[in-house]
Image (cartoon, rainbow, N blue to C red; front, top):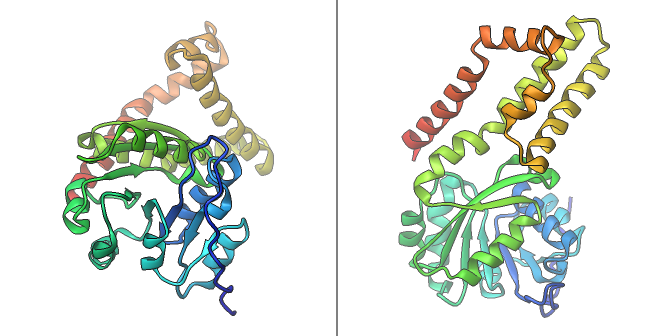
Length: 284
């Protein structure tokens, strides 16, 4: 398969919100694509203001070109032609990439890292920069429902924070926290989707065991989780209060909850988050 042709790079058009800048991705993987697509689709930036260098992966270039992003030949060109640079390569090559790009980086450019597990101090040491924001999104970014947390480097400004918040709000919700919380963030929102996938699968299996067809059971389980999460998010009520509202005396729901309590459901989830956070600390 031939690589898509490198496109001429037009000047970045004004964004819908009036904040015009050029956004570059060093690394053209699936997460980078999800962010770029969300940014373009939401109008935070026009697609013509987004650029990346797919290198020897023509399918990644085609993915970015399909929504109008500009394709360049090298990461160095992406850095030179961008105001905000997202480091979206695999964590094990972040050091190599930043050391190679270091001569082209300056405090005039905002560096944003989405590389899991790479600490701010390492990013600063390898890049030679202090104007950095570290962001941890999670896999639901692929469907525009990410939970992202960011922390700011020494030279990152309030305007930088606001700009990055706009970018990542295009693929979900964004919080700002100190970096010391990032291991716990990994245990909760980073690994959390897998816990919920497991819960959905188990609920669907329960439906099948109770006599439901598999497709119906899976559809009901996934929609139930989505609806319950939306209620927590939109009503502002405590999950325990919402649980009590659907739990009538001697009814079906309390019978099911009793079985969950016998199995230490809540304690097991708490332990899962703590164990994942601990493992993140061990790996970093």
